[in-house]
Length: 459
Image (cartoon, rainbow, N blue to C red):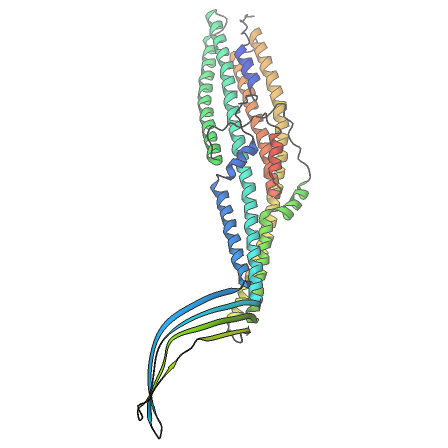
C-alpha cells in the first residue's frame, strides 16, 4: 500500500467555513428599512400615489355640484337714441343720451338632481378603486424589494462558498504537488487539482459579477448606494406554512385588492346604468339675483311745434328676485335607450371580468401555496444532503490519506458539498420570499410580515 502525506486541515478554510452566513456589517439595513426607502423613490409606486391625489381632487370637484354658485357682474354702456313722433296737434322729438352702469349679484344652488347624486357616488367609487390600486402597488413593492434583497444575499453566499471552495481546492492542489514531488502520487492528481482550481477561479469571477448585478438592481430599486442587507441567523427556523390551499384561496376572494377593485368597478357600471335611466329625471334649483343700475344722463324731449324742450334725468334703478327653477327633460330622441343598452352590456362585461379574475387569482394563490410547500420540502432535503455531503467529503479525505481514494474523488466531494450549501441557502431565501408572495396572492401582505422576516436576520 502506498503511503500518502496527509494534507493539513487549513486554518483559513476553517475560518472561511465558520464565517459563511455570519458576516454582518455594522451599517447593514433591514428589509423593512429598504422597503420604506423604496416607497419614496420607486416611480411605479409614486405614479399610483399621484393618481390617488388627482382622484381625490376630482371627488372634491363632483362634491361641489351641490355647492352654491355666486357671481358678481358689472357693466358700463354708452347709449344714444332719437325718435320722432307726431299727434294731430303737434310733432315732437325724443332724444336719449346716457351712460348706464350696472352691478348685479346672482345666486344659484342645486336642490335636487338625481344625475348629480349618482355622479357623486361614482366619484367616491373611483377614489376607492385608486386606493385599492395603491394597496396593490404597495404589496408589489414589498415583494420586489424582498426579492432583490434576498437575491443579493444569495449572490453574496454563492461568492463566499466559491471562495471557500477555492481555498479547499488550493490546499488539495498543494497536497497533490507535494505528493508528486515525494513520489507518492502521479502527475494526474496534480493536473486534476489544477483543472479544478482553474474552474473555481472562473466560478468566482461569475459569482462576483452576479453579486455586482444583484447589488446594482437593489440599489436602483431602493434609490440608495452601498446597501448591505442583513444576513440570516443560523440555525434558521423557517416560518411554517399554515392553512390549506382552500383556506388561502378563500382569503384571496375576500382580501385581494384587485378583486375588491373589480367589485367596485361593477358598482360603477351599475351606477352608469342608473344614470342612463335617470336621464329624464327632473332637477330643482334655487336661484336669486340682486341688481342696480347707475345711469348718467336722461331724456330730452323737443316739441317741434311750440319749440318747448323738456329734459328728464334718469334715476337709479334697483331690482331683486328669488325663485325655484324646475327642469324636466321631455324628449331626448333615441339617445337614452341606446345609452341604457350600452351601460347594461358594460355591466355584464364587468361582471364576467370579475368572475374570471377571481378564478385566476385563486388558482394563482394555490400555485404559490404548492410552490411554497415544495420549497419547504427542498430545504429539509438540502439540509440532509448537506450533512451527507459533509460526511462523504470526510470519508473521501480519509480514503485519500490511506490510499483508497484518489485526488479527483476528494475534489468532486468538495464541489458537491459547496454546491449543496449554495442551493440550501438559495432555497431558504426562496421560502422567505414565497411566504411574502403567498400573502400577496391572498391580499393580506403587510409591513408586519417584513418585520417578522427581519426577526430572522442578524442585526
